[in-house]
Image (cartoon, rainbow, N blue to C red; front, side):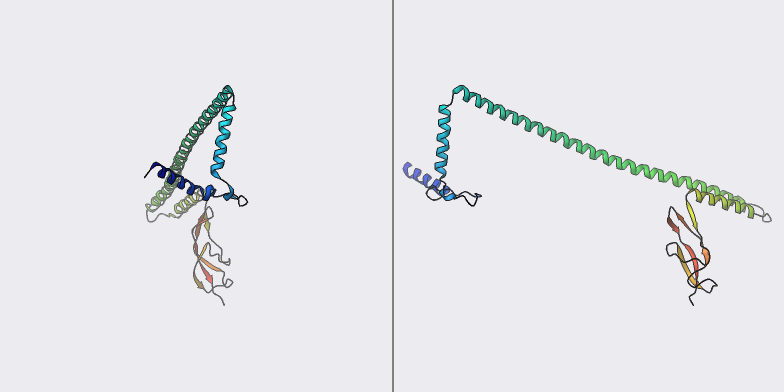
Length: 224
């Protein structure tokens, strides 16, 4: 194949990329623009001519200053990009440190709550053990000894311990309405109370900080 044939093939390929007869095929152009009427070769040629004319007509010193200004602007932009990159890395590192500090804080708070809970439990158990010691001493008395006074005193001591822990007794009076949130009905019985009302308390309940620890067991008057 001759050099002339090769050149013709290259020219034909370029024309195919540009469109038929050098017409432009521009994607994304506004609908009111007739892209077929735009000759890319003509546009490129005129741009090159204008650039050549401007360089030829420009004062060398002025052109040199313009080129220097462009280089300076590019250097400034490069420096600003570098600074922004450094700031981004610094902020990322700060974020990582803050996240690590927050995780450590959560861990410390959890450990502290567990320690406080453990200490509170130990303190409560220690006071209950004092009550148990008093009950044990009361049982060690001679059989003929009246231990009622000692038992009553120990019961008051236990009530004081529960009161210090904000534990309230759930002990409804006969005739009160049944509250399923704090009462457990064991049976319906014959009673002088109104039908459906509490007849008697089988076992008192307890609540702590408005949370029911144990429901009170009650019997209820039968419906007629």
